[in-house]
Structure formats: structure tokens, C-alpha cells
Image 1 (cartoon, rainbow, N blue to C red):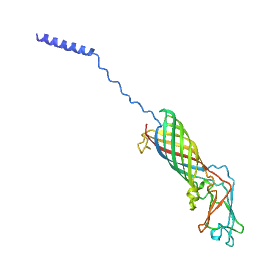
Image 2 (cartoon, one colour):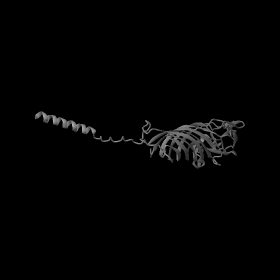
Image 3 (cartoon, rainbow, N blue to C red):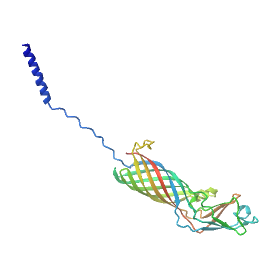
Image 4 (spheres, one colour):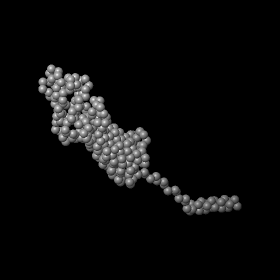
Length: 293
């Protein structure tokens, strides 16, 4: 009897196990895929840049200016061999190379119509320090019968770009993004100042300020968010290379040459030919983008 009960229990267990094996299994949950965010250029940005600037004036003809004699030898740029005040002529060759360092910062905003690839519009403002060489617009030659320029005198031609201390622009930008690469053109308002004020001329801060326009283009590339350059935890770090042409209209301001005699007397003389401040800038920049991915 005992053997019969054991055999029946074993048969029941085997039957139950077989039936459980035939039951349908619960389906495993589907894997969860996180969508990869699509990069967009939309957002605010700020950064800095540095590069090289050089003059682009087409007119390289010499500037020749007659300088009248001062009322006394101490207030005259030219003196005769006997030390008497004299009139003379100053010539600027206009062929000296006007070029040098350009650097500063920029802020702006971009809007991309379609994330990924698409049209991008924006606005950017920048301010730049320039160093085109302070001595490059001083006179190339000076003549006076029986005399010359007094030692310690300074002569400066504000028609050249060496007198520029700084410039800035406020420009629109229009481009097309190929994912993380943006190709764009840019243009807008430009301003700058420098020149006469370094000699302490009356109202020089007003006289030396110039306005005009700027145009150019460039290419910009966005690095990954976790780039080692992303010190500020921004949504992206972008690198750009840009070329810009700047034309500042001098009008009739600072139209001539300025001279300072050894005793500090400021002399001015007019010249009939006016020359705008024209130069080009090639620069590289880095931007930190804030906003959408």
C-alpha cells in the first residue's frame, strides 16, 4: 500500500511539472531606447577671438602737406639753421605696412529653423583692440630751406589706420548648418576711434570717432558638450574662423596732419584729400553656447 501511494505522488508531481512547462511564459519588457538629441545652433553665446588685421586702401599716392611757421621758434615745427621759425613740407609715403594684432570678445544669439541641418539666422556684437603700430603713420620726409624739423617733435597723419585704438561691430548673420558645422555670411554697422586724441587735441574724442560698415563670412564648428574646453558647462563649445572687411568713413574729421612741437604746442594743417579707414581682419574665435542642445 505504501509503495502504491509513493508511486501515485511521484506521478502527480511529474504531471504538474509537465503541465507547468507547457504554460505560456510572460513576455520580457521591450528595451528602452533613449533618443539621441539633435544638435541645434539656437541659443545665446559669448566668447573671445584673436587674429591679424591689415590695411586695404587702394590709394597709395604720397600725402604732401605744407606746414606754416609758428609765431615763435618754440611753437614752430620747423626752424632754420639759425633757430628761427620756418614753414616747411611734410610728406607721408602711405606705403608703410599698416598691420598688426587684433583681439577682443563677442556676444550673440542664433536661431536655427530646423534642428540638425537648416538655415540659421543671428545677430552678433563684438569689441576689438587693435595694434597697427603707432609709428607707421609719422612723416616719411620733411624739408625746409636752410633748416629742418625740431628735435623731439611728433608728426601724425590721422588718415592712416595706425591711429585706430579700437573698433567694434554690430552685425547680422545668415548661414546654413550641416549638423555641427555652420557656414555663414555677416554684415552690419561698424565703429572705431583713435588718432588725434593721443596728442590731447581739443574735442579729440569726438573728432576721432568714426562709423561705417563691415561685411565678411566664416565657418564655425560645434564640439561635443563634454569637450575638455567646456569650462563653463555650456551646451556646446564652438570654434570659428572668420574674415571681416571694415570701412570707417572719416568724413571731414581729422582731415590733415597733427604735429606737436617740443614745448607741447599742437599744430594742425588741412589737406584736400580724404582717406577712409579701410582694413581687413582674419581671426579665430571660441564661443560658449548657452540654451538648447
